[in-house]
Structure formats: C-alpha cells, structure tokens
Amino acid sequence: MDQHTPASDIHQVANEGELSDALLGALDNYDPDAYDPRGVSAGIDLLRQEGWFSRSHSLAFACHGHDSEAGAREGFGRQLQLLYDVGRGSLPLGRIFEGHVNALELVARFATPTQLARYHADAAAGKMFGVWNTEAGNGINVYDLGEGRYELKGAKTFCSGATDVERPIITGHLWRDGRVVGWQMLVVPMERVAPSRVDDTFWSPLGMEASASFAVDFEGVLLEEEDLLGAPDDYHLQPHFSGGAIRFAAVQLGGARALYDQATALLKSMHREHDPYQCHRIADMELAHQTGLNWLQLAPQYALPVWHADEDVIHYANMTRTAILRVCSEILDTAEMAVGARGFLEPKSIQRIYADLKMYLRQPAPDNALAAVGRHAAERARLPAREASGQPAIV
Image 1 (cartoon, rainbow, N blue to C red):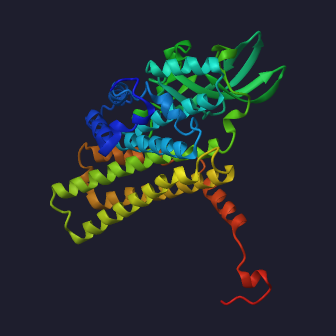
Image 2 (cartoon, rainbow, N blue to C red):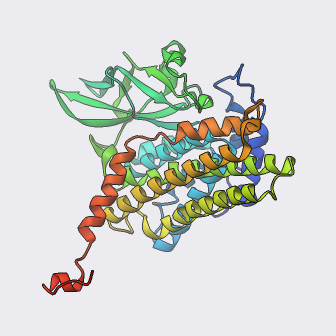
Image 3 (cartoon, helix red, strand yellow):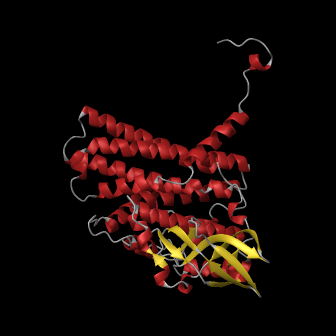
C-alpha cells in the first residue's frame, strides 16, 4: 500500500481479519526450545510493508485531530480495531505496536511544531516509537546541565521492543538547581545508546518472550532541549493517562480471540466440535469474546478525551480493562479445558498464544483500577426514594 494512503483508508488492510491472518502466518514457526526473542521482526516487517508505521501518525491523531465528536469517534474506533487485529495476529507485536501508537499520541498532544514535524518525518520513514516508563530502584534521573543540555542517569525496565524501537519516550525525574521539578518525558534517539546497554538477561518470562521487553541503561546519555517532550508531569495528565488502558485491552482481546480460534480449530481437527461439553466450551468462549467486543465498540461513545468528562473517560477505561481482563481469563481457562493435554503436547500456535496472553494480562495495578470503579459507582449511587424521604423501604 502507498505510504500516503489517506487517514480515511487507514483500516482497509485490517478488514475481515486479513491483517491478523497475515501476522499469524509470519509468526507461526514457533520452536519453544530455540525461541529468538526478536522473532516478531517478521511481523514488524509486514506492518512496515503494509504502511502502518509510515501512517502511524494518522493513527495517533485519530482521536485528537478532529473538530467534531463524530470524526473523533470514527478515528478512535479505527484505532481500536487495528490494535485488536494486530493483537489477534501476535500479542508481542501488539504490545510493541500499541506502545508505538501511544508514543505518537503523546507527540500529537505535547510536541512543539518543530518537534511535530521531526517526529512525523521519523514515523513516515518507518521508525518505531515506544513508551518506556517502568523502572526499578536505579530509575531515570535527568540533570539539567544548562545551555539546553541534559544528562541521563539510570535505567528502564520492561522496555518492550528494545531491539527494534528507535525513538522511545522515556520518563524520569528532572533535576534543576539541585531539586526535582517533575516527571519529564524525553524522546531518546537510540543511536545514542550503545547496544551493550541493552540487557536481555532481564527478560525471562512465562510468555511474551518475543516482545523483547529488556532493561536499557541510559547512564551518561546526553540530550538537548529539543529532546524534552512537554512540561514536567505532563505524562500523568488525566484522562489520557488512565484512558490509554483501552488500547492495551484491545490488543489483549485480539489475542484472546486468536486463542479461541486455535482451540476451536483443534477440536474440529479431532471431530470433537459437536460433543455437547465442547459445544458448551465453544459457546462460553464466544459469549466472553462478544462481551469484550461490546466494551470496545462502546468506547468511542463513552470514553473520548476532550469530548467527554475526564472522570467519565477514566471510569469507562477502568471498567473496560477490568472487564476484558475477566473475559480473557475466562477464555484462557476454557480453552485449556477444551484442548486438554493434547493441545500442549508439541509446539503449536496455541501454546505460544496461551503463554503470551497469560503474561500480557499481568498489567499493573488491576486492584487499583477495580477499586476506582467501585469508588466512582458509589459516589454516583442514589438512595432509593423511600430511604431518601425517610419512609421505610420495602425489603
């Protein structure tokens, strides 16, 4: 596809699962005993060939660059559909691509006109962006050296796509005049970071190996004023910070659909799909998946930043990530029961997808998200009319 395909055609390749099927084919040679954690490179190449990296800035503006709520809804819906389709094809690739879209949304919101032109040019050239916020005890500190120069100290962990991302947005404490002034975003050109600073020994997970979520040491990297994105503490501004959870939930649900497909295909290959117990399991997976789709399909109606109240966007995002976590967990358990030991006897796509989904569902602070849903619901709850008026309630 031409890299200048207009934004209105951005969903074309994903129609009817074409993108998911192509990604599954590109990534299906899975050997768990000799698994290259950079194995998503075939999927990345496919996304580049189809023009998704070159047009990713259009994805980033899909939710923000419209003068009408209808246009923003359409853009958000396209974005979620694409993330679902990539996740259905490959969860590790979906995680990396979701980070790419997230990064360019941050650019769309906070970049200066000069930065915007530069990063759009990078995206149009096929460069991959990402967001690396997680860190351990040796996290990032950014020291203002004066005259527009900055020095980094420390490292980041869980840097998904560490071997492929070329323009990560990282975050850290910004120091000026001996004190911390806030949590600052920076866009780091990875050509300034020696390959030896990327630590793959950090990453030995149950699943998602191919996401290459390594640790990266940024000690001594020098940046300029133009590499700082936004003002201190912009990264955590609501409702975008919490609302962004809908994006990774879309990827997760796509992976759950892939697992559902694989489990059903295995049952059909054994002529077990009409067994009444297996029919029940297939039905349970279908119902769970459709429930997740319903949450995603309503997101453009209820969770658009700018067009909806901040607290409503955050509430819907927290509900969506929680509901899809439960949906995906149900599909995991049901698929495992459906395929039994035979489904895990030899290397198959089902093994890879199962392990990847189990790991990817471990997103941070699920308890906090659920508690926030409860608090919000309690604040909006109304007393029954009889209680409010002092009249005895009917039990």
